[in-house]
Image 1 (cartoon, rainbow, N blue to C red):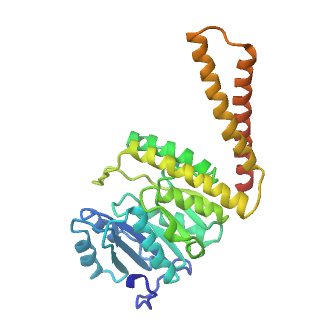
Image 2: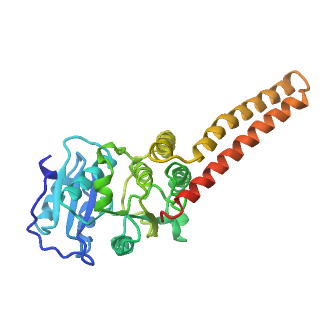
Length: 329
């Protein structure tokens, strides 16, 4: 795409603590709120990359109108809808190809408070982490502000993402508000990242494989400002659970088998084999006891042994994973 070629910018570089900053804004049908988002981007941001994901409303017109007043805005339209992950990836590619020091993702629906931007940037600028991620759950008002169904879905996916990614200290996995270094964007294969709602989860897994440091930063949860979401929570949780399982297995293979070897893989393997055997056998014995009659004590012991041994193996594997990744924060 011509939009992604390196550009010699005529924009005066304000910079933030001697680092060039680009804000990437994925936008799909955001005509009502995109103007507000663009107006509130802090002055220290050098570039505002708006990726219009084939919107059907006047999002493009609103961005172009604002572009006349703010020369920092770069407008990149998609010919077809690629999903929020695809839009973010396009913005990341622009930032990578233009050698931007730090790139920050902010939603086009004004749900990410620009006042939190310095808090996200500081640990990255100071070289403490490679990726800082907003966490809305740190604040006491999260439970009151975030819709309960979304809060619950986020909690489930956050737990599964801890296991899949190896970043056990990270929560609020679905928060897309984050700042990332140029080194990360040059290292990760951006074309292979999941293009839909599971992009943040996929991104975390890939960061872990390359041993990048990640930190959660408390940000303000923003809801009830006119944002709209067509996301069906139960469908998202179901779909992303399978995605996370696939990413988890890929991470184990890449990080603990191909790039290096760690015995936690064997513990996970034992857990995955023994636990289902024990549970299924125990369930069979229960049905047999209810419908037929007493079962042998040895059979019950075998079921308990397999189940307990499998769970212990899984817990040991998780503990090894925590220890191996504890410095990545």
